[in-house]
Image 1 (cartoon, rainbow, N blue to C red):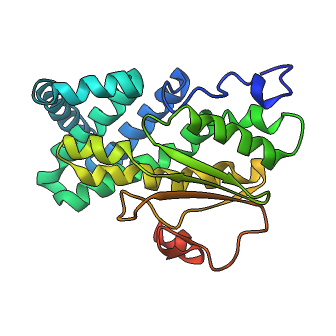
Image 2: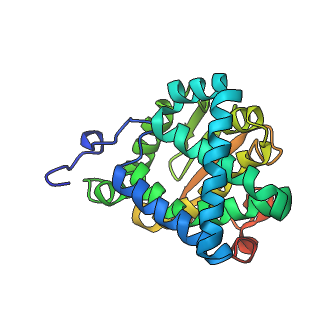
Length: 249
């Protein structure tokens, strides 16, 4: 994006969490199909996709109120993503069990997380803005979550080298519980664990998150430390940060 030097001039500044760029959605679809093919082969992909289409049609009838709320609050992209992952989970549960089906969805989400996080934060362009990179990231993040208060009500505190967003209500928990698969609310948590590290160096921060609502916490705490200042005692979702690489493999 040429000739943009201020964070506030970026195209996605303050746009919220919906409406992922079309090119990113296409790449995510390739990852989705690729992971299913790796696990089940091409014949398995065909069977799974056919079953998912049937499951989606059923959800459109039996959960019409939830779908309408999704369409209003999350936009077209949010509806597609939520119904796709729910349909996948329901189709795979008889084969893999509930936790196994979740793990398939998690594997997909953690592969798409770096590309979606880069798009959400317009990372390449944000890194080129004038001024301090960490300060610019905080400015962009603040606007992103201010625009998402209807889905993820939150408060934000800036103490210079540490910026915290505390989310007090999670739309993922509400939606996936209503669709009959509350486990899928954790996908957002696991997405962040793979996504934020993918852009951290570009914006001079370290990501920590002690708790999330979907994983049993009272709130979701997004903590961004200026690179090199995060204390060794910090944890991510209750797990010491030094264990995260092995935990997420």
